[in-house]
Amino acid sequence: QLQLQESGPGLVKPSETLSLTCAVSGGSINGSTYYWGWIRQPPGKGLEWIGLIYYTGSTYYSSSLKSRVTISLDPSKIHFSLQLSSVTAADTAVYFCARHVVVAAAAVDYWGQGTLVTVSS
Amino acid sequence: SYDLTQPPSLSVSPGQTANIACSGDKLGDKYVSWYQQTPGQSPVLVIYQDGNRPSGIPERFSGSNSANTATLTISGAQAVDEADYYCQTWDTGTVIFGGGTKLTVL
Figure (cartoon, each protein chain N blue to C red):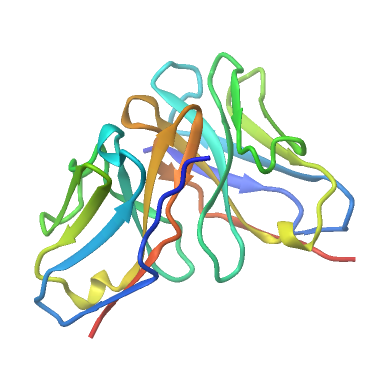
């Protein structure tokens, strides 16, 4: 059974960089069937897609966040990471890592439990 | 950019059929997925590729997609189905979510 687990600081100061890691267990990142991505949800609001990465290292990012986002794969391919720079209070959200099925229009079949990141001084 | 529009809320009585709509330009030409999210939990995939149910999802959940509208149907809605529901598709390298529909079963 695949498991995804987010980790990283729960509090980030404005203008700094938010960094999160998603550990993948019970499966492998290395394969053409899936994308690996990040989705966030501000408190009381809907889901917002951030971006995703393919096992080759190719990335796709939300146009609204593209200038601030980097998603990367660990060379061992047992985890992938998110960096979001120049954060503001508007970036406060629960951040989920996710596995997207390539042939199913990137349907998310596995989600992490989510981690709350608060941007505040 | 491509947008998906959902009604903010829908209310049905127990045992009734809930139809949750998701609209977008020529949406019928794309695959649509649906997610259920209860408070404090991660979303759960309930429908993928318009009408396929993942293992473990009850048969009362079904989906369709044609023209500009995709629909999630919950036949015989139960109190446990009360949740937020999100549609999702993929367009030119972008994952798009609808704004979500809060389903009340009361």
